[in-house]
Image (cartoon, rainbow, N blue to C red):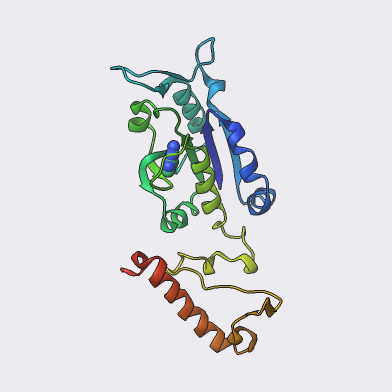
Length: 225
Ligand code: 6GU
């Protein structure tokens, strides 16, 4: 998969992809992530990327020209399956959306900033609008990092058996059961006996029960359908 991220703050997207699973996914060529600075495509001598909004009101709007230039340049290089705009008024991201996106070849992600982007960008280029939750961030960069992380780990080959995405919370609409590691007792706090029993059938049954119990109490909405 190739992911192009368009931003006015490329610094914010340096570290999220430079460690652990995200770095390994790039090293192993499962994904190529390119971050583009919208300011490099500014058409005026001050390198502005925003302007006052028509009709008045507080807050700047991301200008159409540099973003359109950059999008057109990228679209001339390859065909994009989706051009995503990160915005608090987008569809709230869920695991199912990530599963679908992980199957795509070329994805472009535009990070919103200030009061947002000139509506003509949304009308003419954007194919999907995504939010990561019902709260407001200063910009779309951290949201884009969350989206990319959630999607890239699902690309076949990125995770090994030990970290397999198949047992993640949400993949089967259930939260994950509790987990434990050595020692078997700490401060008098014991690991559940069944996990030490070696009885794989009983362990599997216990995990299913705990997953269901946890989902019922914490996220009953997941059990509706
Ligand atoms: Cl995608 N952007 C911003 N600015 N805030 C958000 C968001 C996105 N998703 C949740 N809050």
